[in-house]
Length: 176
Image (cartoon, rainbow, N blue to C red):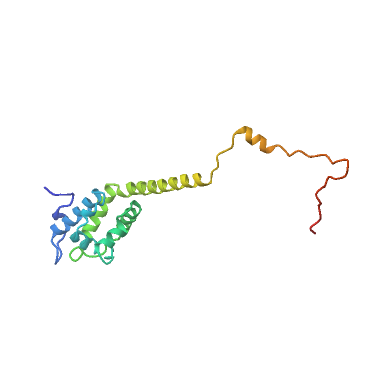
């Protein structure tokens, strides 16, 4: 019983890898996605092969690769998009291009891209709503009660001039 959708009979062996190796890689790849990208499923052997497929680079080590592609839904979405646009160049007798194509088909079939687009959008929305709450708490002022509001609008009383001439009026001068 296979551990995934890929069987060795679907792939061409290379000089250094068997058809079973290719099927195992494809099944491990899909299992890694299904596990919600859990760090423990990102083994050294899986990293070694993945870093040579889909035009990836090694990022110096497995930790750097994992941090680049799998720590947030936005990163995972970027990884899936990168995986799906890769043209899978090469000859199956020398490369893993046949398993790359099979993985792409399975990603499309399982609709992973749409799932992670929704997740990434929800993560952005959640962050923005939290920021909105913080900004509203900082900048929104509570409206004063109606009675106080009306009292503030009343113009100050004007005192009539004194008959003895002691009332001082403000001097208004031109600034020009």
